[in-house]
Image 1 (cartoon, rainbow, N blue to C red):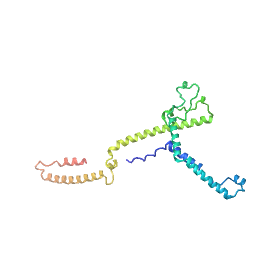
Image 2: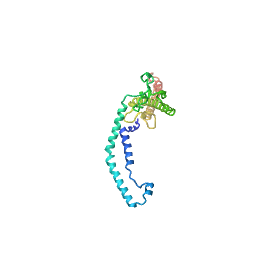
Image 3: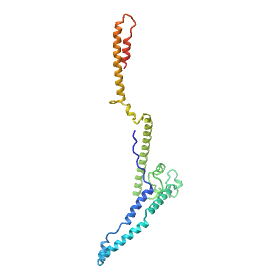
Image 4: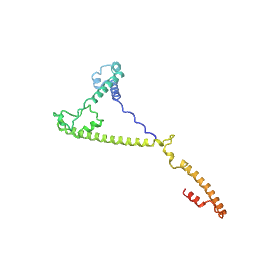
Amino acid sequence: MSSAPQPPPPPTITTLKSAFLTTQTRVLTNPLHRPTRVWESSNDELPEKQVNDALAKLNHRIQQHGKRVYAPQATRHVAEQIDALYTTAIHAPLDLPDRDHDDDDPEGEGGVSTAADLADKGVIERLPDQWPDEKGADEESKRRYEELVGRLKGLEQQRVEAQGRVARLRGLKKLLEPFEEAGEGVQRNLVGRNGEVEQELERMRMLLARVGGRVTGLRKRQEEEEEGGDGMDVDGVEGVLGRF
C-alpha cells in the first residue's frame, strides 16, 4: 500500500517573524524616485540636476543605513527574541475564567490570556461558551467571542474525529502487512486474467481431463473382466471426480 505524502511541517515562529521583518525592511529601504508634487511646486526654482543629485545621495544613504541597521543577522536575532517571548508566554500560568470555581476570582479579574495555547484540548474545553458579563465588553465583541469559541470547539471535534480515523486506518494497515510480500500486496491473490488462480484452475482442468481418460479406460477394462468379479469400482471413482 502506497503511503500518502506527508504534509510539510508548519513554519516556526522564528521563520514567520524573520519573513515579516525582511518584508518590512525592504519597504523601509526602498529608494525614492521623485519628490512629491507639493514639494516640487514650492521649490520649482531649483535646477532639476541638483534635485536628482540630492536624490541619488539620499538613496545611497538609505541603502547604507539599511545594511548596517537591518542586517540579516540582526533580523534573525530579533526573530529569535520574539520566539523566546512566545515560548515563555505559552508556559506561563493560564488566566482563564473557571466555570467550576468562580469563587477563586471574586473580583472578576480573569479573562482569556494571550498566553493561552488555543490549540490545546484542555484549554479549549475550559473556554466558556459566552463571555462573562462581569468581564465587561460590548455586544459586538461578545457576539464575536461566541462565534469564535463555537468555531474553535467545532474544529477541535473535527480534529478528534480525524485522529480516530487515522488510528483506525493505521490499524488496518498493520493487519494487511502480512500480505505485502515482494511488494506485490494482496492484489495478486484476486481472480483475474492470467493470474495465479486462473493458472491453477487451468492445471486442474488438464488433470481432470487426464484422469477422465484413465477412468474411461478402466470402465472398458471392467466390462471385459466383469465375469472375474475383481474389477475396479469405476462408479466410485467418477463420484469422487464429480466433486471437483
